[in-house]
Length: 273
Image (cartoon, rainbow, N blue to C red; front, side, top):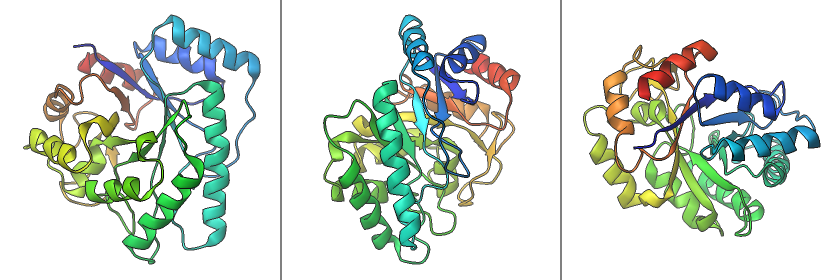
């Protein structure tokens, strides 16, 4: 088993610096925000930095990398201006991903804000139909959500429906967040095999492309999004270790999004390795 594991890293010092940080903690993949996660502004790419980044990733034989859209991107907001920002940000981000040759672009499907789940699904699918096309090098991943508030995407069925309604289902995949699915009522502690069988039945395991590997501060089925360090939450070290050993998961990029700095991530990576 070749474990591909890394964590979320800051891109503030540039892309090649992220590769160095990943190397320093024995990571062979990582995730980064495409722009300010709680704002929306994005720095222009530095061509020399991008060139060095691509060269280093190739030399080190890194597993696929994951770019994460900003939290402010809501593809199914009730306000048209919110949806316009989502379209602008995703369009710009996807153009950048083609330049970076980044394998995956992950985003939170969004919150329907009282419009109803069906309306939310339709708006997300419409946006994806406009922006995602078969020739892209970067695959767009829908993240499994915890189901807080009016979030769309806390059930496998909702994600499947978004894909089916979009015009580009073959260019879409799923990033499964262990904290989110546990909070949404998928029991990966007691029945990880059954959860993955359910995923396969509804979405197909070929759609599972990346894992956000997090413990949870809140109990099973809480519908809250509260990440915890590995082993300090309600999922626990052994359950997460058992989960990543599943055939459907063990070769995917595993991204830690636990509340840590680099030394804490290094320790978690050592544990899973």
